Structures are given as structure tokens and as C-alpha cells.
Image (cartoon, rainbow, N blue to C red; front, side, top):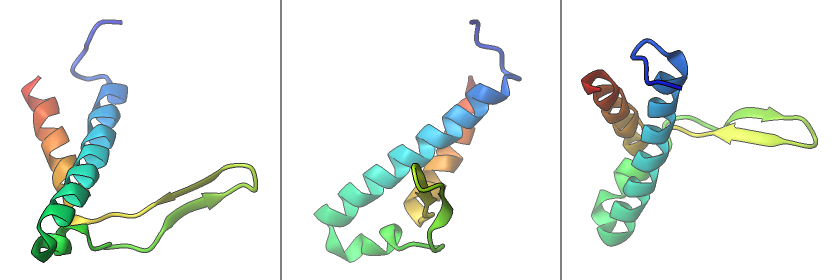
Length: 78
């Protein structure tokens, strides 16, 4: 499968990976520098669903939003 810039799957993938990496880096930074723990503060409550077999929830924080923005910028560059 060739990389086509208009492929929505790649776009969602970049945003999703940006959110995961941003959240992970934000957690690491908050552990190394406790005064920066504000970047790990949740902006929303858990948003998700529970199907009794599968449970999925999503919480947004500042570092995840920064990761999403960086994922968008990297997608635009490619």
C-alpha cells in the first residue's frame, strides 16, 4: 500500500500515535519534574464505552493535545 497524502487512515494513525506518544512523554516529564505535573492533568472525564467484554475509555490532557497537534504537523509535512 503506497502512502497517499489524502488517505484518512494515515491521518487518523498520525493523530492517534501523536496522542499516545504525547501522553507518554507528558507522564515521563511529570515524573522527572513534579512541578510540571499540570501537563498531565485530565481535561475531560473518561469518555468511552463498556460492552461487558470490551471496555474502552479516553481521557484528554495537555500533553496528548500537544501530541495530536505535532502528529498533524508531521502529517502535513509528509
